[in-house]
Length: 124
Image 1 (cartoon, rainbow, N blue to C red):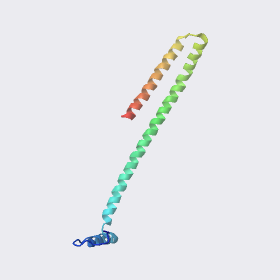
Image 2: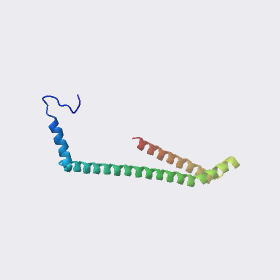
Image 3: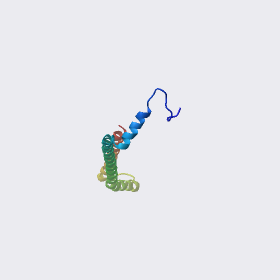
Image 4: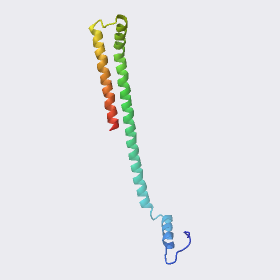
């Protein structure tokens, strides 16, 4: 049975014509415009949320990179000096070198803790 053939006892042809005529004449245009406006507002709000999330991720990444570079530039030279002292003299010769070793250990622990906290937040 095709859609063009009529079934005896049913009058569906007139309903179909009324819907087509109503759509062509614009009777449902106000409702369709309201739905389109509502849809546009929802899509724009979703786009705003997506942009905010992306900006937050970029900001977090920039802070992580800055913190890592700061640790490397601040802790790197004393660690290099301590390694050089240990290689040349086979022991730490001054309290400054001991403080540098402790500073390296503490800053490494802080950096590791910060990375672990960021990973845990992202996971939950």
